[in-house]
Length: 443
Image 1 (spheres, one colour):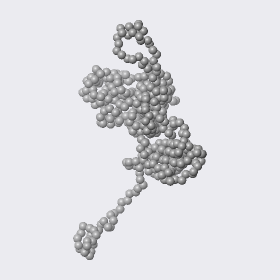
Image 2: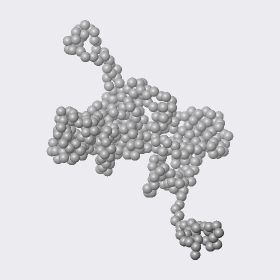
Image 3: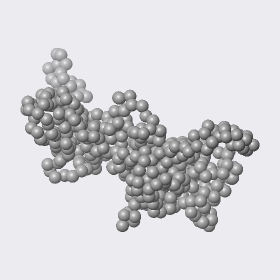
């Protein structure tokens, strides 16, 4: 049953490469033979470079999934495993459906063949028959907008022309799964919009799309799910807004700590980003006041996505040691990319807290009216004390049928009424015994 629900299944997938141990240089067969006979070049067993360290990832059919992570984290290796360019060193990988990929720009094109000939070759490589490719040839050429250049060698093409031809072929061979590696970053605004429209059409048809990109806003807005690859592992998989928000926090934390990043294959620890406090994979906090849970509850019973008019309570569960002092609870309402919209704390608002917190308890932050427009947001709660800091984060969605723009909806109302009497009559001039009507003279 699981196989029928997932387009891609990866279980404990490891990918390692043999490390080069002999310095590369240009040689001839004669010089190599002489070195071998003289014993100057003994074969040596090289070490392994491990790029992926046990990937467990299922990508559901019909979903658009964004793969994020810093350079060197293993994203491109992951895509090359999915597309069959690499084979796993160990583990299980299963692809359910015809797959088409846009990886390296122009990959698979023969430079001396024309665009038309390369369409035929690539279509056959991707699993189509000659008749199927020829039946779609005109549609592919029209989409690429190459015109008379379609019969010129592709080595004469610009990078934008390469991209247009590659995208047209990959998206017109009727794949079940489309893999994209930053390819949409190349090209003019017109073709980018055209490509996006094609991708939206793919989504409507229920195709599976896997997109590797550094543009987190694209992942937030366009992807159903996101997978964060970090240090050769899958750090987190979930709703795109949740994953990208935690990724942004980890990047900010690494920058604040001046953490140097090394590709995972070259480090024992995997070159991973530091853990975000309160994240699912973070170690337990040792702070005297520890946040143990954060939930958003609508007393009316409304479930997420909330509406702008919903009253919402943040339930912050905590555990406290006897030694805790000077405790402060801080609340930060943020956009999906971590920009603060509103921040306050028990200290700023002089909220009285007991001198000694109970061993376990709950703080309720009550919003009488949420007031946010449709979009993705995060609520970050921090407990601060002299002995340390503990943090929890909760992403949530707001939906609204209104076409308003901005971030929040202030309490307001509209009133239409006739102009006040004072605006209809011109005040009397000095010396006038009778007021003048607006627009008139003395009677």
